[in-house]
Length: 175
Image 1 (tube, helix red, strand yellow):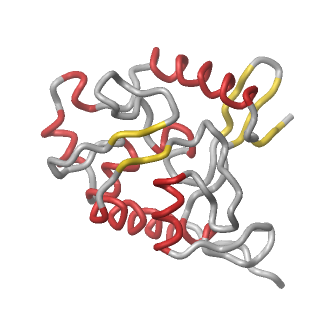
Image 2 (spheres, rainbow, N blue to C red):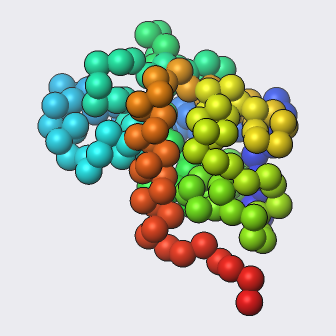
């Protein structure tokens, strides 16, 4: 049974339990084992690095509000930890249920074609949503979604990377 994480305290509890599971598998911080420089070279772009590690190649710190974070304010999880390595959403098992995170490839977020039932994003509105946790249509995102503190360049780099994920597989169109 698939459920979407909703804006409820239950969803936050689910995320916390999933977070503990992910953390026990090593988390997403390449600096944890001293390989930060090597990890930075392994990514095709700064946006890819942010997507997979929640760490910028720049000296600027990316911190989060509202979710599990390290004492320095950095996220304990990156986009790929919840939305999958391809950005298309990932199942998060919890007990007898599985919760699925949404597809965050830019083509889907910017689409007006079904199955998307929400207002489409632009690069500007997506950047604002990443920072505030308020969707383009005014609804509050689930509390499990981090509110990212990123500079403009890092936001642009991340969105550019989400656009490359969109190119990997075409978005469905109407017949």
